[in-house]
Image (cartoon, rainbow, N blue to C red; front, top):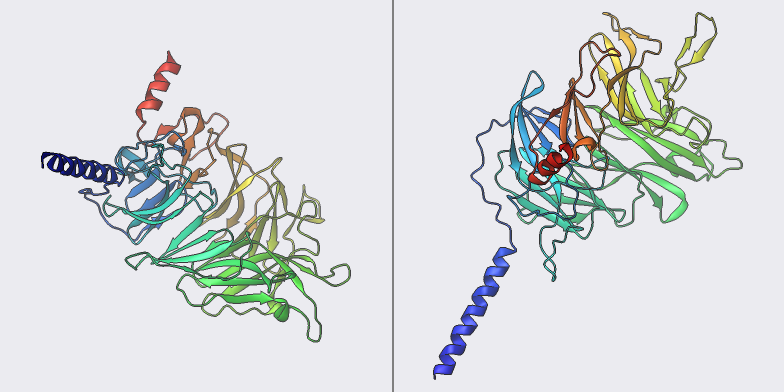
Length: 479
């Protein structure tokens, strides 16, 4: 009888220990949160830093995804923090809002998003395998309220190859060339596959839509340009051989999406078009602007920029910007300005009467940082070798007339930025970046109003906290 009692006690203890281990593997996301002001003002969504009302929310350094303790409440580096903005500049001390590591591998759509008062982010899986090691090569998509409460895991994946974006109550992601949508309003975050067939990898996400290409019935010589609305419904065909080809022909077209831009009422797709006729007479780089309310293609309104393939020297455009009556087309080495009808914008050089196309040579491989339009100027920024430059492209007269300004490049930032996950951000007159010179921690630099050759680009400031490991390393290095 005593043996049975002893066996029962041991069994209960084993169950209790096992239960406690299971509980220990489950993170506790509960927190009292912080006092905050909710806002509709959101700027620079996606990336390492987002303005939300009077605050800047940011990723506090690039922590990577290996050799980490990513249990909720522990991380400092890589966590989501916030700081008050005063006149657009960080002011005071930062505060950790989400004590989880934010990490990913997508440098285009990666980073944090704030939508409907939730912060959306990706984080290494914190559960452990049979050896007790964290599954840090796996990824979770998560969200937390801007006050630090209501942390939830939305979806989990076996690696970091998932790209996602959020709008309203919908999260869209791409995995293995498959497009999925998650209903964020549903309790279990219902996941639905949008396309039965695979999409091509050169998709673009704009406000209201994700735009992508597919093979027509798996025919690799016949492509379809499609879009899916964030509001749901069925995917829609934007352009295909049937509505591009001339009446009475059976021409097939290969469509390769390069970029997409949008405004409140429309979005524009920029693509390479190639026909299967002899010598491909229609091949070139084109665009079409679709009405968001009724996106219908009309070939007669298609804009053509080149009659050459996209890999022709100096025509390998990768990024576009729509600006008033102009289109800025950028390869990795040059910027060209087109009129809205697809013709080159020209200027005379050094007082000569001959008009030549505007062609800005970056002198190396560069990345576009976008355009900023003020009441009097249009400024274009680009990054080369971790240095950010700006060019005043146009002055704007009181009557709205744009006048091209001859080349006037200024260096506005020269820090050492780590861009392996999130590129640096320019918000207002402040550059936010992961400082590769200081263990990839989060820093910022206020761009001076008057920039000259004596500007001290090393006058940068720590944005967030530094964890103990980096702090000790800095002391060791200093000694």
